[in-house]
Structures are given as structure tokens and as C-alpha cells.
Amino acid sequence: MVISTGMLMAYEAVALILGRTSGTDCRGWFLNPHRPAIERPRSALTAALMRPMVRRAIDQLTGRP
Image 1: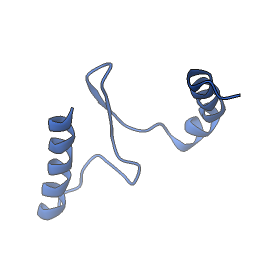
Image 2 (image 1 turned 90 degrees about the vertical axis):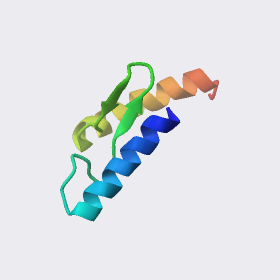
Image 3 (image 1 turned 180 degrees about the horizontal axis):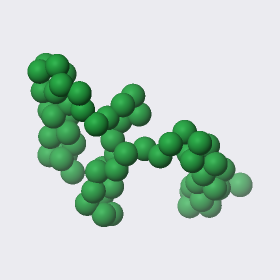
Image 4 (image 1 turned 180 degrees about the vertical axis):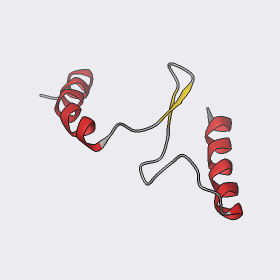
């Protein structure tokens, strides 16, 4: 996982140095370790709609009331 993260960071640095555009934006990319894949963040609207469900699931996993 560390090597993959480093490669993504190096790719972005080289793209900046060469003045090329990359596929990422201010939200970045995410490495999904359960399914070896690079994922882009969801749209702002989708993220806002999913936020309460995700927070509830995380609270259940961590045992928060």
C-alpha cells in the first residue's frame, strides 16, 4: 500500500512539473485496499446524500451512541 501511495504522489508531482493535467482535483484519489482499485470521490451531491448513512455506519462500528 505504501508503494502504491508513493507512486500516485510521484505521478502527480511529475504531472505538475511537466505542466500536464491529471485526472485528480482538490478532493484527490482514493486507494481501495479491499478491491485493488483507485477510486475518484463521488460528486458533491451524492456525497452529501450519503453522509448521514456513512456516519451512522461508522458510529455503529465504533460503538458510539
